[in-house]
Length: 264
Ligand code: DGL
Image 1 (cartoon, rainbow, N blue to C red):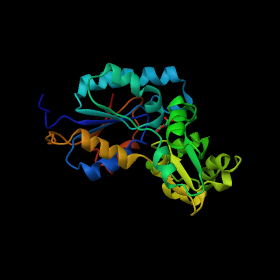
Image 2: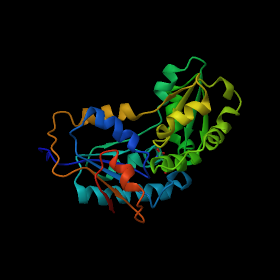
Image 3: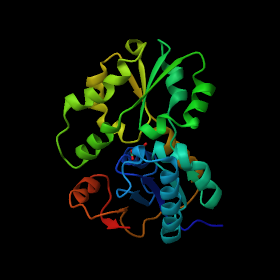
């Protein structure tokens, strides 16, 4: 069936982390209409149970795809993807691109054989991560660490609030202090919020540590799946958010080409 040129790509995250994927997508597909959806009423997903996350993600994406008729949905959230991707794909007809920890590229890059993985508490305990580790990092050491404070700091940063270097350092210390932590030379940013703090993290981790994340790969996947489709905006791109209106959001989102913020 022909794709409506104004049909959007819907990017979904619990908060503003998915903007790191939007940035990568804009570089490849500048003309693609976008709706950015943030489940701010559910943030942070990383502190929720699997059942809570799956119910929220499946319910919201079902309602959003009926309302906005996206050509493709990207779950721009590692926590939601590692838990609910399969389930959402089973129930929605629209193509779904997920975001999973970039363990494969990290394993190809590491020289020391010791990889750090920063994610949310919910992501790092997923069988999905066990499977990626077994498939791509066999023979390497993967040191997982939950860094929930980085989610809050990234949300603050985007709203123009100052980010404390000490809090960023404290959030990653538990990774560096695990056995063999001093040998980490590559860190997977397994949460879409974390690349928003790339400068602060580079300071905290040291210049010998390289960071990898999936945003460019996800953007390439979206470009591949929409190849040959017509793109024409019928209105400016916008964001939809759950929860209470937050006046600090509009200026933050405008900088990402999202002209309005609507409550969902
Ligand atoms: N951005 C989300 C992720 O990639 C997580 C933030 C949260 O805890 O909700 O995992």
